[in-house]
Length: 253
Image (cartoon, helix red, strand yellow):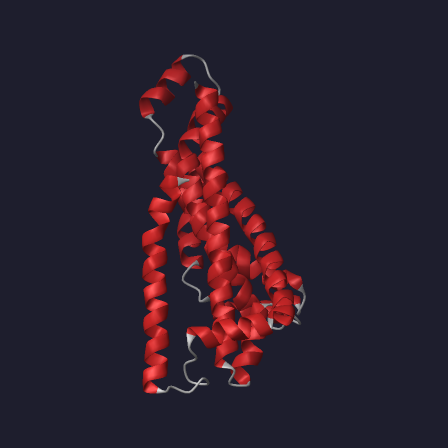
């Protein structure tokens, strides 16, 4: 607990100082709320509109988690296939890189045309955002496997499946979780972008309605909510990483 406090008090202090400077600047220069609201005004609006906003936040959280789980599964499956089948990796890997050069905001309207306004195009957007960091991190983790240990297991008569699950997979876990942490934060962004396409609820919908009515305070409420959701997902993956890697290390002992 003391270690956690020692690591977090500095960034919390810096954040509080930034909010204080922001508050002072808005009051000193008498900036209008529609142009740049103060942190106190944003907090006040968050409290007042919580009953309405919580519905949108919950919808985005559900969509983010669902898309993240699907994207993670797709990313891991693709990484395993590319790792196990060499000629397939050489053929498909460049296409994966090219797929990330397509702007999501441009591809999203096409998905609506192809698949309608349901949940499917939204999940596709989040999956496209999430799977690539996991695939790349997983492949890098597989490549970091100790060649000496791999050669030793092969000389001991281990099958390719045994080498993969007993050696390569544990070695890749730290890299996999690095990709998961990146994708977890991207999933919220992907969910918000997908909600701009056409949805009845969600932070993206709330943000769009607020910006159209020049309620800048509500836009900032949505922005801070996106940041908090991303941070929450990151912390959950971080805790899961400690539990899994610690558990795998105990099994090896």
